[in-house]
Image (cartoon, rainbow over all chains, first blue to last red):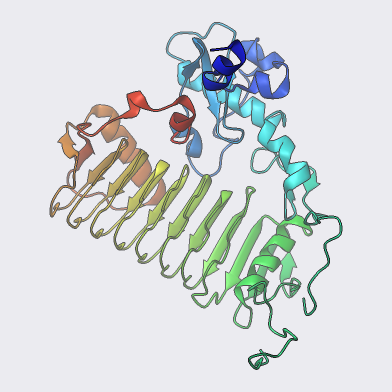
Length: 149
Length: 264
């Protein structure tokens, strides 16, 4: 069996996706705990308590501590040392920093694909820029709308 | 809608299947001091939703009251920012679905699938809810002060569902994460095919579903229950029992990482 055939049948599978791969870089808050310490989780979430962050926990990806960003379906790796007993708290703060800064790839996609007016930074930052106000469906060149529509 | 005879070439109905494809927000709200009120009696679902969105986006109002929602379906959906919305009346099917951030209060009842796919936020319903309340929610708190129908929290992937009264059959069906707190009795098939998460029941359990078993209530559980019920002023029963996945049907280990992410 040739190498090419081998590669087609059993390609080098890369099945994990992290935010660094999507963005092509990591962000300072992934390396420096002091950049996330000041984030108030209760203030950053609706209602009493920490709301949706209750279900966010420190996980690991590729053997590195990481928090899952559901808005881009990727992991945000944490490269600094996490104080014992504060694993989930720090994971939540890193995730909130990622969302509030607009670095989540899912947020970046909003600018192109949002179909109705909404805030870029959604529920994480008050009064952020508006996207989706001028969305038009893509059209196929040469296609004409049927009569009566 | 004009009738079209068989064989007639000109199409006069809306083939896109939308009732009001070119509707515009009615702009009838009374706005005062960052708060807005409008009467939805004569509005369709689309007009109600357009007016809510206009208030949030154009007027930057963050406290909205909708009077007389008339149990219309799919009202208050896809609100993706922090705000407070109060519905004075009842909602129909799929009320306040697909939301991410708002705090919603509904003074009446709701139909099927209220708050389905909620990502974050708070939804409080003062009376009863139909079946499938909180279907596939991923986060946030859904509070039903009254009773709920069948399959509450079906495919729940996070968040907390609190029911002040009774719950119907197959409560927590295929639940994957999160918490349910049912203060009253629950019907047959509790937690059927659940993968993870926890269901707390204050009343009687008619029967357990496949792969659901009772677990020991911990101090952390009691703390969480006290906190959640206290937040929303739900009267706590004398005691709770906790139900979890028995893990006899678990096959997570063989899942691909990308499939695993679906339940994160």
